[in-house]
Each structure stands twice: as structure tokens, then as C-alpha cells.
Length: 293
Image 1 (tube, rainbow, N blue to C red):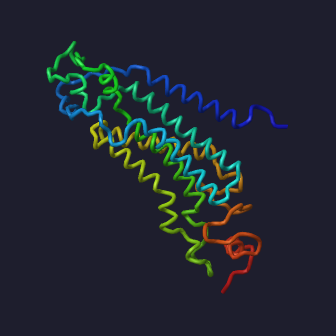
Image 2: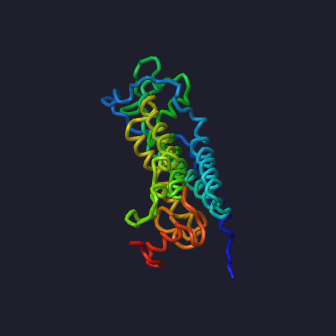
């Protein structure tokens, strides 16, 4: 008999703990790094509150848009409820993990933003409390606190943790990398991976890349902040994907989750069922049936 808490309860507890940690770290003042006067030109970019991708859009980029894509692809391809539930749980784990780790790094490292000079000394009069410790005279103290949270980029991390996970699900569900052997006689071109499938599955990656690059263009982050934030978000998505394995319940194989035994759906453009061309081709590939000459 199966004992212990249900899987959904474990997932919910982990996500809640990560969200609580991430939210708590938002209130923690970051580490104050030693500021070398000779490095001030690196932090002297113009300060502006205008952002190409405002902070209020992050819940949409990290959660709601990926969730919409997952549900849409699942409904279009006839996915079962267990698979949908696993996919949504994986998305929540990915985003909460990426958010928590990002905030932990932000407050632990205390990296200066490219516009820190203006945040600290908006009047242009540079002053020091002691060697390496700036005596800031900000118009808004919050600007200085946020100015010491440059590494890594939270926008980049949040975008990739949600959108990269959704792209992975769409790639597996739409079978962008076709499981069929191109050398098998009779494989119709429409069964193979197409540019349309790639576009449908990978547009979230383009959106996440735009968000990340906008942070560098708007002088809110250095290039290394954006790169590391993007890698962090992608890593969180990968860990959530391999942990939850949302397509494994129907006989998934490999990292892409493509089915062999017990397929519950056919690739777009192919027929399914006993005796179909799809089944015959799969049988020939696995040595279960005669091969056409």
C-alpha cells in the first residue's frame, strides 16, 4: 500500500517554501560591496525609471503566458489530466526555484547596477563615508538599495524559468524532433519536424531572449548579469523538467518525452490507432513488422 503524503501536497509545499523564501529576500538589504573609485565609470550610465519590460509584467512572462501555452498545446494534442497536472506543477517548481535562487544571489553578492552613480549621487557630488564606502545622498533611498541588486538579472531569470519550461513541453508534445527514421520507406514529409512546429514550440525562447536583452539595453544590468540570469532560469526549467517528467506517464522516452509504447496521441498530421500508417512505420523501425522494399 502506498504511504506518505500525495505528490501534489509535496509539490505544493516545495513551491510555497520557495515562494516564501523569495518573497522574504525581497525585503532584505543587499550586501554592501567595496566600491573602488576607479570603477565608477562602469556604473555611470543614465538612470531612468522607464523600462522596456516593466517589473509588473513578470508574473505574465514567468507564469501566465507559459501556463497558457502548456494548456493550449495539451488541449490541442489531447493530453491527459495527469500530464497537464504534472506540467503545471513543473512550471511552478521552475519559476519558484529560479526566483528564490536569483534573490538569494542578489542580496548575497550586492552587485552594483550600471546606473548606480546617479542613484547614489543624483546631484553629481561624489562623497565617501570611508574608503570604498559611498556616502549616498539619494532622492529616494529605495533607489540605492535596488541599485545594489544587479547580479543576476531577475527579469532574465524569471522569463527563462517559465518560458523555457513551456518551450520544452511544447517541443516534446508537438514532437519537434520527429521520432521517425527518415530512412524508412513511406515516411511522409508531413510526419517530420517542420518549421511550423519549431515556431510554435520555440517562440517563448525568443520572447525570453528579448526580455533579457532589454535589461542590458535599458542600462539596468551588465551583460554578465543578463547572461547568468538567463542561464539560471534555464537551469531551473531543466531541473523542474527532468524532476517532474510530465510526459512520462504515457510511456515517454528520452529527454524529449517522445512515446514508443502506449502512445496516447499521434504527431500532428499523422493518424493513430491499430493498423494505421503511423503504427506500421513504428513497427518497422522497431523490427516488429516487415519492411517495404
